[in-house]
Image (tube, rainbow, N blue to C red; front, top):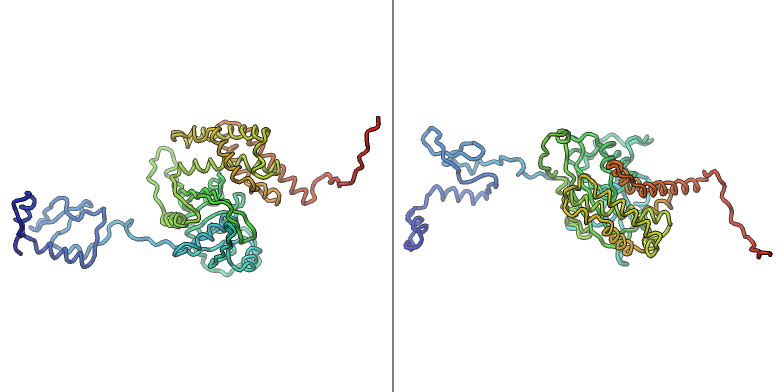
Length: 470
């Protein structure tokens, strides 16, 4: 092939290219690479680093892996991936949702509206819920600003705790492994619910906890997955959407919000011992898939955060929850009725000062910038006023649980601050008082409904008011 014929009085590079003829071997290798569309990894240097003699007389090259390969051989045809991390690992697309609360139904309804929707299976724990599912048309209805949208195409599965004696056990068959699980059940029921599907979760599975309380994961690790080597991967979500339930599978989206997501670093037994170096946390394929599915769902407005930033978002949400919900239970009022009352305001300020002191003393937040300003009592009080104003006509979930004689999440709200305060030698008197008051009121209502109170109720009778006689 003749040399390149163009003007050579320009730069030295052009003159060098004009003097060097085109190599036929280079042309053949380039044609093979184009036809086969073979691409190289960013970890593999295509052009050699240093020259090495193979003892035969031909020129060979040594790459970074220390392997010698002959450049004259057809290496393009025998090239194989050397790092398994660059190979594609398919993750099952099915997503299981444990918990039929308002948040769980919102997530399931939102998944059904995205392109290439994932298969969603609702895990129900009561046969009555299965009957309600069939009665309501096997669909989930969502009302937003007066518009009702019904979506179908879900699978339903009845799960029961492993310690429950089932009179009609299912036939023996291999259980289906759950790779993607979203838990939106109430905190006191989380452990018993996970025990029913614990055998179907592996080390490669991912569990997303969508509850605005804290302390659940420690309890799950102690009672469900005690072995750090075999426990699943954990993700935590903080959701600010306001959703109310109408029926078993009908909800109302009253207020738009956001969803903050974060992956908790996986810590093995060897890394938990002092003096060992912590490795860089890696994301499991199921965690990546679940995060991508959540973030590409427009209704959820989901965003990923680092573990430290997510912890601060959790504490902000929990601080407001620990003030609003217990006070509405004790006063039996809506959220808006907590405002414009000086006596209640003094109690709120005492609570927020105590919570602020505990949060700012946490060891996991030491060294984080602006923690003392972010969790100052003044800023928390401003957030309290804004939240109560935006949800003035709402009834807190804790008050709904007390009226329905159901167990509340008070142990995972105010009880969390009492527990962390004891670890830091801080006496959380206000939180401990509210904790016991809410439990006492709940027990009183339950015993009254069951007729177990030792004192009979006084019947209301008409009384005649007589004037005072002097």
